[in-house]
Each structure stands twice: as structure tokens, then as C-alpha cells.
Image (cartoon, rainbow, N blue to C red; front, side):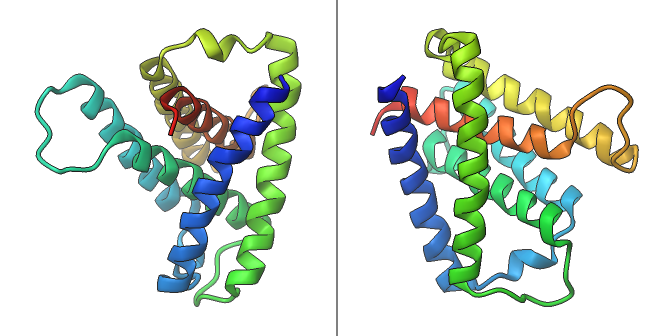
Amino acid sequence: MQNTSKQYNAVVEECRSLFIKKMSDYGSAWRILRLPSLTDQIFIKAQRIRQLQENDVRKVDEGERGEFIGIVNYCVMALVQIELGVVENPDISTEEATGLYDKHIATTKELMENKNHDYGEAWRDMRISSLTDLILQKLLRVKTIENNKGETLVSEGIDANYQDMINYAIFAMIHMGK
């Protein structure tokens, strides 16, 4: 599992690097987005990945990897929004956003390590298409929870679903290699 940690960190660094670059370009404009808007952005990314996996013809020259990176980054944004709440105007610097990014990734990685221990790295035998389907399933669950005003009877909350989506997307990118 030590190899998993190194691979995980390498993928996170790729995602984090793009997040920081986009913060430089756009600032924290994403801070105005409500959770359903972020969920829909993630849904668009996951749906595009599924279409790329199913279709032979591509009309836009962008691959799955970039979409998985987008899923990771939008999920982190959602976790930040859960923590800080939605604002009317961008309100955090790149440094603050990066600190929050690192905090939520660390928590998510810890969750992955615990589940990875219990499941014996079963994800290594999964197909990327199955990981995509699991992300889409989690998105449908999140949409239902959002429609129920965040209430669940026995299920984990929205934050746990975002964390699972991050981990599935990272697993997919590990499978893809560099």
C-alpha cells in the first residue's frame, strides 16, 4: 500500500497544480457557487467521461484525464463550500484556498487509506469505466440528498460522497498512468 500512497500523492499534485493555476487566472470566483451547482459541474464531467468511454468518435480533443482532474477539484471546492458556506463575492486568496485544498485532500486520503486497508486494494482490479459509473452513482445520491435539503435517514452525508468521488477519480488516474 506504500506504492498506493506515492501514486495517490502524484495524482493529487497534478490536480493541485491545476487548481492553483486556475486560482491565479480566476481567483476564488467559485466561492459563489451553491452545492447543487458544483454537483452539476461534477456531473457534467462524469457524464463526458462516460461518453468518451462509450463513443469511438471524439469531436473535442480533450481526454478523460482532464475531466477526472476536474472532478477532483470541483469536489474539493464543494467540501470547502460545506465548511465555509457560500458567499456573494470571492473572498479567499490563492494561499488560503490552497491551504483548504490541502486540508480536505489530507482528510480524503486518510479515508482512502482506511478503506483501502479494509477492502484490500480492490480498486486495483476495477475497470476505469466502473470507477466512472461509481462516480455517477454517487452524484445521483448527492442530488437526492440535496433535493431532501441535506437530510438522510441512515446514509452518510454529502461530504462523504464527495470524498468517495475524489478517491474514485484518483484511482482512475492511477490506472491511466502518466
